[in-house]
Length: 422
Image (cartoon, rainbow, N blue to C red; front, side, top):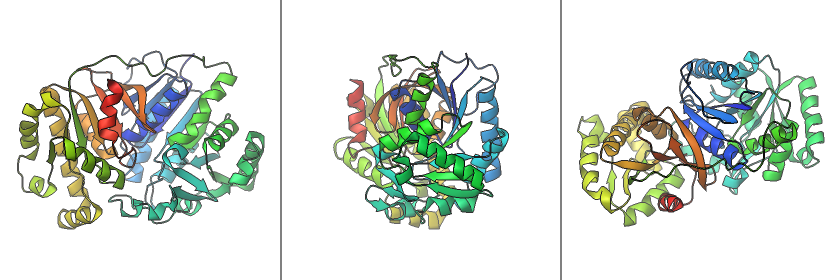
């Protein structure tokens, strides 16, 4: 019958977030790391999420990678496509959300879709087109200090309009609260008016279910993982998806445990601080990396004799002021690349030392780690916190991995996550 839903995510943790949402709603899902090679075998699943590393690269490169992923998914007969980006909509005025979404619409010969990054389970809501993180606007949430994609404008209509050539409209919550039929009619009206995109308000998961139902016939949907909660039910109504399947089952895998954190978000800073109080921790210094010191080997040598006693923590996480100071000294791109390369090397060393359960915090860090470990794909398992499931690698050695977006998770996420496995 082919795949039901083909998804393209602009970073690794975002892909895991989306895949976990689909599994929770009853779709058997795998996440592939990059565009699979032709002929790559797939397990018997309903959805595939292709994880790219395209959020912060040049827009032309992001478009090319996304179109390659779309072509692979189209070759597997997907009935609908989803472009996933972060619930904080973080990007720049040049992209990459708008340019990629437009390119995908063109490739699918479609003239309209929505943009809905709302994720109420993680306190991301949209009201009158303004994105809130908890009780504050996005630009007051800490995202204004993001080292690569600072978000200083919370109005998503304005943000997306600066990134696209097509018109951007708004379907507000008072329409969505009237149900799927009224929402679908509003989408039709926006299309007739000439809008190519509609930002959709969403204050809770009921709104997301309405939006998902109203988008049942769309070739392409764009948004955060939240809006995907309504899509599996569309397939059930069409008789294409079975109910009652244990979509989150994972194999039992034992081995040492470790946490690698490259994110400098506010949430991850809290998580690192809490874990470091009770567990051995090693801080990666970008300045030492820039001086050519063997920081990665030092971290592995430090960790190896400690692994038998429980989870260890290796982190490059730092407060915003410290991050800005390092970036001013080294340059933002160089500092980021040095940390990613070091974390990748540390991950390889820890796996060689017997680590088989690993948490990685930060989208860029997660991408670097799974690339270094040659992980071709992930089977999605049970959720730890909203947007963050455990996964099992499809390659060798078999591992359990939790790839966490920097902004996600409660302060005790790292220690709590290992308890989910026991």
